[in-house]
Every structure is written in C-alpha cells, then in structure tokens.
Image (cartoon, rainbow, N blue to C red; front, side):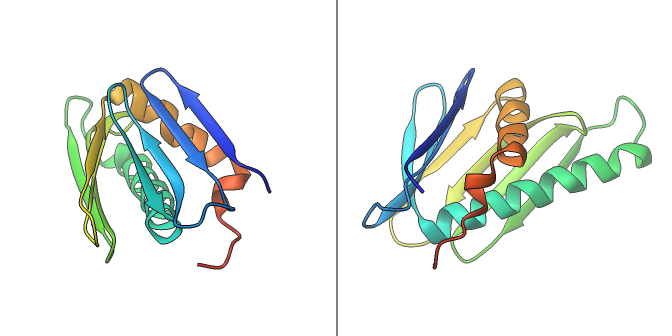
Length: 127
C-alpha cells in the first residue's frame, strides 16, 4: 500500500506504511505532527470508540446537554467535548517525544467521518 492522505477544512490525516519511523500524520489548521504506527493505530481506534460513545449517549441527554469523554492508552490521550453530533477532538501524545493537537467541532466531525470511510487507516501492518 502506498502513502495515503485525506484532508478537509481544518484537518489532514496521512499514512505511509513504508516510512521508517513515523508512519502517521495528524494536522490541524496551523499545526502538524507525525506519529509512529502504534501511536497512529491507538489514535484511530480511540477516535472511533469515542465517536461511538458520543453517538450512543445521544438518546440519554437533553438537547442542550454537552458531554465530555476521554480515553487513554500507553501512547496517547484523547478527549471529545460537545454535543453528540458536534464535538471538538483533542489529543496529547504520552510516550517518547511529546505533542498535542486539537480540532474544533466542524473539523472534528469531518475527520471522524474520514476515519470511518478510509480502509487504509485500518492499519493492517505489523506494529
């Protein structure tokens, strides 16, 4: 599989399975950071799980109620905050070098949708 890039308004995701160390790319409006395969895999998995949680909580909340959910692995911490259908997404790298990034709700919704539609982000490489 070759290098893949997906982007939208205020976000960009990249995956290069042939890269020596940093296979993944996360980017916002004015920042970008490369991730190892493990970090990127954890990011993708956690984003999907948090997205599912937000969707599942929709029926439990009143229309004006906001929700904050977080998830953490050994490599990354993520947080979603907002309404079940419109929330911001933030991450902090926890291992090795440090880094963090955030997407506002409109960009986060597009990014989460892209992760769900992008089979190349399933990471079928050996980690």
